[in-house]
Length: 346
Image (cartoon, rainbow, N blue to C red; front, side, top):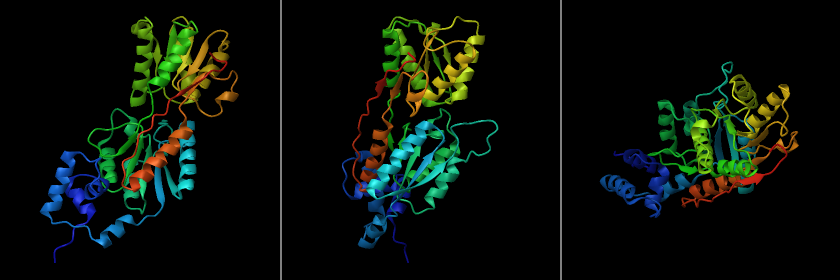
């Protein structure tokens, strides 16, 4: 007896996600004509007709979402997960958290979990959707195993990625503003009269670092400052890396710049500690600012001048978009503008 095809089978044959097949069946206008034709061709060839039982199977929900995070100890991820969980509770959902520890790649760490293994676990579990926060998707060189696991994941469940959008992968992406936050804080430093500004932190292998450094250089260029003269010291994203950046700066033999722009608050605080250990005070000897606010920096001495990315709003948007996807509707994008926080450090 010939097997009755399911929506999952149609998705695999058409090489699209289950959500895309569902959109075609429900005549959702979000699907492109090319994709719609590809799915419809498979449907017609196999005489597929979703019956009521099949529809009820699709609508069965566990009311549980997976959240994959690359380092829960990072203030950015911790804050965002907190907001996502609050929004989930309000919507009647629970979350299952997977912490890969792939963001803080320390040589002594043996706790890193392969993300493609986590994706396989999620596919085999009864979960309604997946939210991916950072990880290998943010790196310039993405492992092939990760991409294969991601493809299987998005063919099975609705997937939202907060971060980078990869071409040819059918997932919903919520892009963070990595450009205007840098332009805003760099212009602030320029308006304060600082022309010699160094950028510290971030990693050359991470997509976001490139975006922020490019925005930094471009803003200085627009102010008539030669990009070649600008110091950029890429270490990583944690406090110890801000400390390391200052040591490199002081050992370089170059004069101390007027201002430092750190990739985030943790790097800024590490830099301030290193400066203090070298008898240099902020802001008396050098000013320090940050591209990204983390909760608690307002209690630092001095209080940091930084940029709030409004992660509370971002967390609400993530869940709103996920619920919209689960209802097979097109999510509406929402711009979340960064907010400048003027502190004592710059």
